[in-house]
Image (cartoon, rainbow, N blue to C red; front, side, top):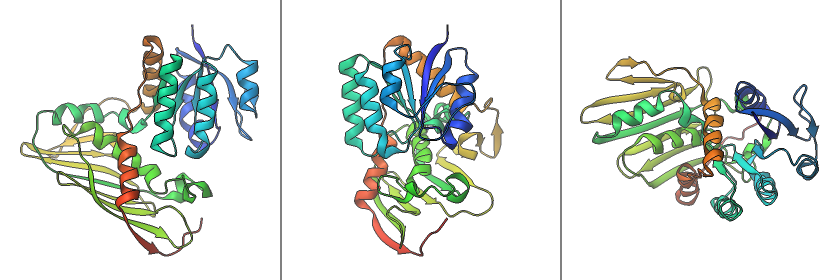
Length: 303
């Protein structure tokens, strides 16, 4: 029998990814939504989260697709009400609040899943397996996209807590922390802030172990979501956000692209086993970049 789930925050990512993933799964049934404006056809909708929690005790799982800043309050309420919680990436506005949620979930016996959808891209597991016994000589993340295409008019991404370019770049960071056979830590960063914005629009990162990243939210034309890892045994490349894997120039068959369905498969497993999955390593690198980063003021940005 499908488990009823409530989707909170009916914006672009919820409509484009979460709703189809839930509807395509035998394990889940979209039983309600909570949003100030968005709805899903045929699904009961609420504008008040507390009302949903009170009136729908049958809904045991909540998936939060809100921006990072308000997400903590919703997650806290859901866990206190005995619900299991999925967090869209990045899992929160700060590391401390996610640690707090993790402790709350443990105390309540609830599942908490901090999702990193790009880790579910079809090439990622294959890349991790190939790199497991390799000696890494260099790795580079090239993550460049057009904020106007993916967050049209969404000023919150440039407000405190919105994370700026680190919102999409956390996808690349989630992949590199998954596939490398050794941990990395940031040693330097340069952050480009538009003169009229509070979060960076571009960044260059340097990590221990000869790992670097070039991040930009001003990309015109084709979008770039690429990771290259050089080893003593050959070169591995992940393209299209992990959807395509190339090893020494030859493309490797990796299977269908089902990032969000795979997240919900993982949530099914976690709830059944009473476990949680709260890996914060990508977010640690973001926090370190904002701590170590040299601030560079660039031209103003307008949608």
